[in-house]
Structure formats: structure tokens, C-alpha cells
Image 1 (tube, rainbow, N blue to C red):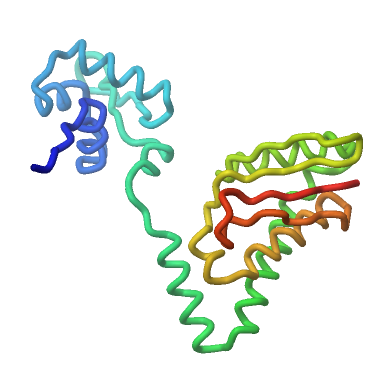
Image 2 (spheres, helix red, strand yellow):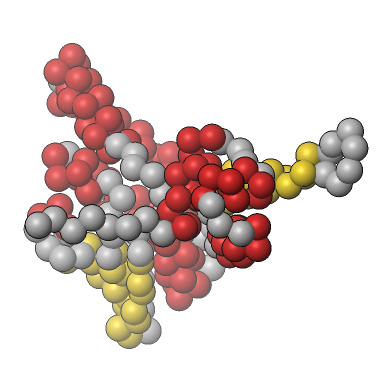
Length: 209
């Protein structure tokens, strides 16, 4: 017998906001068949977590209405297939223009990311650069961690790869990332010692200055 997971009130609120786009407390109270106070308690917590947002809408008579909707972070909780679409586009481009074009695309991405990153590394010591790299990679969803081995040597670990499906099929994604790190950290002494696209648990880099 299959177990059917019961939706929480939070899940129901998210689903309703996804379907209806914007709702008031009164709307949600009626849809969920729970008290006004219970709805407000959930909304307060969800807004603090950053998954919903609210705005006041003035009424001809009476107090302004508080309207709730999904935030960008809340939208990300719903399934997306950006990676699948990206792979399809890359395959089409490869079929139309050849493999070299794919390499050029990843090189173009490397150049763009180098410009984006390098501004945040100017006038920083090696230690400060590694802290900044750790921060940037976490901002981009890599679940990064940095450990210092000695005065000039560090290990960067990425526990998540947001483009893993693409990296499995196009190894240029990984080589361009390593190349980009060399440019922004201003050192050639970077070795990828572990790679998720090759079946390892995590991506790891040994970095020496």
C-alpha cells in the first residue's frame, strides 16, 4: 500500500499563491478553512523565511488590504527544468555548428564569469581571496567550504553542482571553471582533485599561492 504524504498548511499556502498569484488573509482563511489567526501566524513565518512577500493595497473605504504573493525564493521551490532545456539547446547547437562551437560557448561563459568575479578580488590577500571565493560560490548554490592547509595552500570543496547534468555531458564546463579560478585568484597552482561529473562525491580543488 502506498503512503500518501499529507500536505502541510505551509505547502497549501504555497500552492494557492502559485495558482492564484496574490491572496489576502481572508482569501486564505476561506480556502484553508482555518482561523484568521492561524493563517497570519503561517504568513508571518513564511515572510520571515523570505518565501512570500506582501504589499498594502489602498481601499476606497477602510484599512488597506495586505496582499500576499510568492517571492523569487518562493518561486524556486517549484520544479524547474532549466538544466534539461539548456542541455537540449547545447545539443542542437552542437548538431548545427559542431563541437568547437560548444567549446567557444563555455569559453565565453568563462570570460563573463571572470569579469564578474575579479572585481571582488582586487587588493585582497590570498586568505581574503579564498574567503571571497567561498562567499561567491555559496551565493551561486555550490555549498562551498574552504579549509587552509598551510600558509599558502587551501582546499575548496563544492558539495553541490548547480550544473551537474550539463557537466556530465560537456566536460568543458569543468575545465573552464578551473581556468576561471586561476584567472581570478591569480595563481596557476590549482588542481581539481575530485569532480562530481566523474563520479566523485564532491568537487575539490587544491589551491596554492
